Length: 125
Image 1 (cartoon, one colour):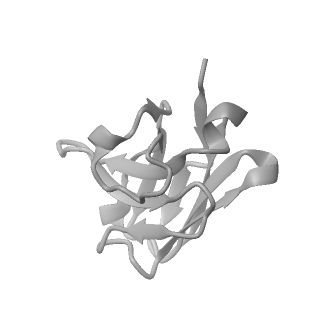
Image 2 (cartoon, helix red, strand yellow):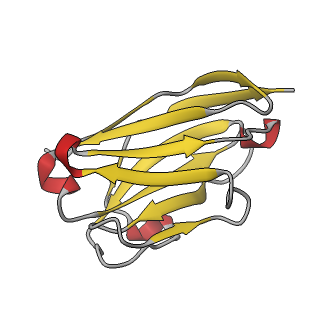
């Protein structure tokens, strides 16, 4: 069964950095677009970033552009989200997702086929 396992969440002060990791089973990782989404308390889940199957194309939400970087390591079957200049507004549960639509960096969560369990990120002021 396909699996996505996130790690790297935690608590950090405003202005700090965190790096999230998402380990994927090989069948998923090698040919899927990978994305990160987040859900803050009382809010709907929203798109954060995505990277296509070869890593040649990325997409970011406006709210994180210039602060977050998505990348993937094929040797480790892992996708990363480097988060810099964090603010309390970034506090959320962060989810990793995989989409069969491997050529595209889609923002709609309905385009993603597999999801991780989520990892909590808390940013204090």
